[in-house]
Amino acid sequence: MIRLKAPQRREQLIEVATKLFAKSGYEATTTAAIADAAGVTEPILYRHFKSKQELFVAIVRAMSEQTMQQWRASIEGVTDPAERIRRICEGIPDHIKRLSDAYHVLHGALATSRDKKVIAVVREHYQQIEDFFGKLVTDGIKAGAFRKNQNPKAAAWHFIWAGIGYAMIHLNLGPIDRSVTEDTIESILRGLRA
Image (cartoon, rainbow, N blue to C red; front, side, top):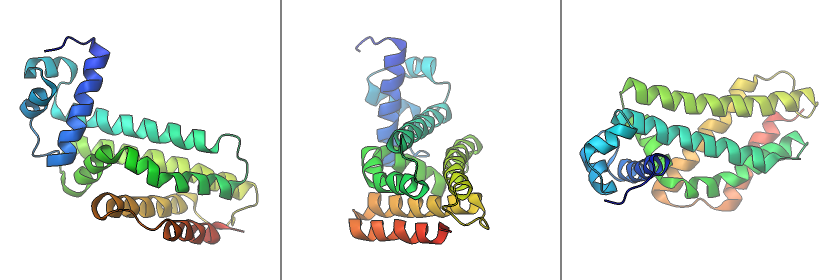
């Protein structure tokens, strides 16, 4: 067993758990299997994470943080409300591909888990996305680029539903033609415009 410092061991355990959860599902993956794949004992795993749930929470929160960082970076310096949304949406295929195992974990749990802590962190993830897109839409309304008579929360969920659908198809059936993705983004934007 290679001795790692605590932060590196946590990252290693998150990485291993992500791959196993993506392959076998959250419910079917045991802490014993995670420890074995990481080359550690279960007591070492439990020094870093009190439970399998805690590992799942760490995976989703890390993915959420990476998502928010990428989205903020992609719109830095962009003032046009429609262009901000367009840039984020156009980057989603590459983002999902890069974090494919984490998205398999998230969507697998969303579809099958009844674990309250798991569902709570999935809800937290989508709340962050709702808040992010809701703010973009609100900013667009204030700038006069988007219609005033729309609910920013409903508009945000339009993007979330499209994103979930895209991710599920992309991850399980293969890439969707880029022109279809671009046309879908433009269709949603047309519905927002003033």
